[in-house]
Structures are given as structure tokens and as C-alpha cells.
Amino acid sequence: MKANNEERELPKVLAISLSTWRKDSGIHTQTDLFKFWDVDKVAQIYTKSDLPNTPVCNQFFQISENAIIHSVLSRESVGRKVQNGDLADQKAVAAEQQLYAKAHKKKSWAMTVVREIVWKLGKWKTPALNQFIQKFDADVYFVPIYPVIYTAKIQQYILKKFPKPYVCYLADDNYSYMVCGKNPFAYIHRFFLRKVVKDLASNCDEMFTITKTEAKDTDKLFGTHSVVLTKGIDYSNLEYTLNIPNKPIKMVYTGNLLIGRASSLITISKALKNINQEMEIATLDIYSPTVLDDEVMNWLNSNGCHYRGAVPKDKVVEIQRNADIVVFVESLENEHRYAARLSFSTKLTDYFASGKCIFAIGDKDIAPIEYLRENDSAVIATDYSAVEGQLRMLVSSPEKIREYGKKAFDCGKRNHEESVIKKTFIETIKRASGRGNHEL
Image (cartoon, rainbow, N blue to C red; front, side):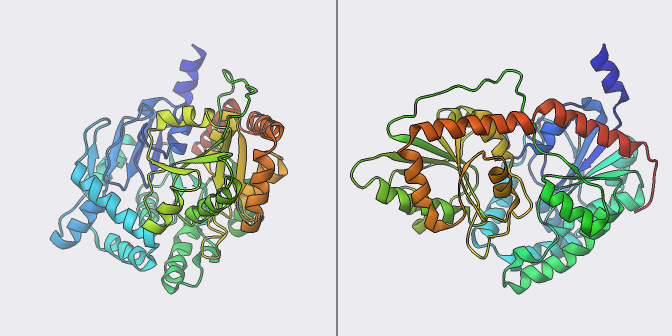
């Protein structure tokens, strides 16, 4: 009865997101947060071609990028209410995924700017969208801040036309110029992105950030009082298991290879070439949906490395728990060095739950590496020249692998217990919803 009373007290939340919520997606931070909610008190507006498939919500409104492109040419209005579990137009989804893959593969900032222009010209401000918002009649909006302008423009439109309290969630550096490198299109895009990010962040009722580093930065910039919120781990049925490492040592990476991460994995491949010279001492299995050029893929399929392609979400936990070492990488190249400056990958919480030794590569000043170092929960290389030495130390010391597996497990239990995350999220949303309507 207590749980039912709690659900009745929860406010109605409208999430305005980039991606839809799918239980088979690798992106599940938001769905993990809302799995505590009454499904009838959550709705989502999103901007991808895929259709929702999730147990946390039943009401969705889609403004897809493919539809926006067609609307620029046809001048017809776009946006529609969609059903949970419906089958998407796979051709449209595939076309959109290819577009994103091409943009990411070469990191085309020019294409990013063109996309923003297309969205600006698209006809998405429609009676259908307005009716969906009015009919659901949220108590509070959930507004993640993304590194794109068009989603922010949709958020601003809704906040101004239908004022309600709102809570932002900032999980990356979507404001500073540090991630732009020397690309002029990156600076142009960031200049206009900063305007909408400042508008959203400065006027929100509550702000979630994903790390303490980002909280400090955000509060200084926007005058917020950030609440740190990461992905939670349900430790109620988890116990640390002391395993004897395999022969050869089994390393695993699960995740995308974007923003320079492939370069860090190539450095591991080069290190393994030397380590495995006389006999195969360690291997690295790479599970990723990202396919890059032939030169990169050759490195990821040699020296004991094996690119395994994409894997269903429900298999990832098993893969991680069968490993001896789980690999976390960010780029050390200048172009991407600060891409994760303020972020905290949900992959790390999965790694903590696995109870496996974490081997991490990343700049010493980015938030995830600072966090791992402060909690002594990983073996870390902050320079490519240190990768081989750190790996040699690990693969020759089974006791170190076990020691850091336990440290990682304990770090997760200490800092990411799901019940604490749930309490923080619910209390913050309820606090914001009680503040009444206001205009952006």
C-alpha cells in the first residue's frame, strides 16, 4: 500500500528528449530514472525516427529528423503521437542512423551546422504538438541539455508557450569552447548553442549534473544549486565474487568508438603486440556498434584484439562478468581530449557492478578519470606512453586484478546505490513541481 501511495503523490512529468526510450537501447539513463514512476504520470517528446519500446511510459510525441527534412521541401507540418511498442519504419531509421554514423565518422561540424539550419526551417510548431502537451498537462518538465541547438529550441518553445516548473539535466560539457579544437564550424555552432544552454540552465527550478566537477562548473556559470545524479546500481542481490583470472587474461570493452576512443583502443592493441610477442598473455574483445575505416579496424582485429560488433543490451552484463579486466577509454588526442571533461559514463557504473578490475585511459583533468583516481577504483593511464607499462603490471599480477575488482565493486556500492539515487531524483522532481508555473 505504501508504494501505491507514493506513486499517487508523484507529479506528472513531461520529458523533452533527443532520443526515444527503448529497453533494447544502449542509452538508458533516463529510463533507469523513470522506472520508479507511475507509467501514467510520464510522457515524452523526442526527435528521432525510432519508436519507443519501454515499460516506464505510455505517451509519446515524435518529431523525427527525417520528417523535418521532408517538411523543409514540402512545407508540410510534422510531428505525431506514437504508440509504445509499435514497429518503426526501418528504412527511415536506417537512413537516419547512416546520416549520424557518417557525421560521427568524420566529425563533420559543417554537417552539424547544416542540420541545425534544416531544423530551424522545419515546420514542427503544430496544433498536434500543442494538443499533446495540453492534454497531458504536466506538473513539471524534465529537460536534459544536449550538445545540439534544435532540441533546445523545442524545449524553449514548450517552456514559453506552456509555462511549468522544469528540471534540467546536464551530463556533458555543452557550454565551454574547450571541445571545439580549431574547427571554425565547431566555434560557430558552440556560439549559438551557448545562448540556448544559458537560457535553459539559468532559469530552471532544479539542475541535475552527473559529476561534482560539473556541478561546481555549472553553479558558477548559471547560479544554480546542482544536485549530482548518476546511474544507480541495485546492490540488494549483488555480491563480490573472487575469481581466478583466465589464461590468457580476458579484457573486454563495451561501448561506442566515437570522439577518439578508437585511438585509445589502438594504443592498447599496440601494447598487446609487444606483451603477446612470445605467447598470448592477454586478449581484448571489443563489443561496439561503431564501424570505422579499414586502418582502425585492422588494429582492432590484431595482436589479441577482436572486434565483435554490436551486442544486445541484455548480453552486456554477462560479457562484463566473464571478463578479468573491463576497459574504459577516453581520447588523449588534442581534438577530443576534453570531450568528456565533465561527463560520467554510465558504462562505469555497469563496470562497478560487475566487480571486475577497471583499466582506464584518459586525461588526468577530465571528471571520470578524476573520480576513478579519487576513489582508487581503477588502474589508470593518463598518457599513451604509460599504457603498455600499466598493462604489463596488471597482466603479470593476478592479485592486482582481483584487488582492483574489489575496489571497483566497493566504489559502486559506496557511491551509486540505487535506493539513494531514487530518493534524490524523486525528492528533487517533487521539490521543483511545488514551485508553481513560471515563464522562461
